[in-house]
Image 1 (cartoon, rainbow, N blue to C red):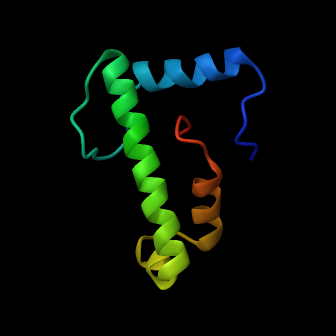
Image 2: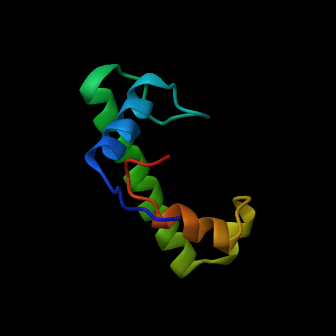
Image 3: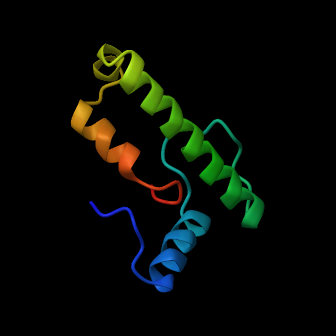
Amino acid sequence: MNPTLNTISDFYSAVRLDVREPPTGESLLPRRPGLFGLFAVWRERAFFRRDLALKARDTPYLIGDMGLTMDAAREELAKPFWRR
C-alpha cells in the first residue's frame, strides 16, 4: 500500500470520507461535526499508531493479543494519520 497521496483530489477525497462517514467501532472522543471533529479523529489515529509502534517495538507478543498479526500492524503503521 502506498501511503502517499498522488494528487490534491486524493487528499480531498480522504478528508471528505472522514467528515461524512461515521467512525467504525468505539472512539475515545465523541463525534464532532466539521473541521474540529476532523482534527480530533486525525489526532486520535496518530496517537493510536504511535502507541501501536511502541507496542510492536517493545512488546511484540502483545500484538497477537490485540488480534493483529505483525504484518497487519506494519500495514497500519505505514498509513498516514488521515487514512483509515
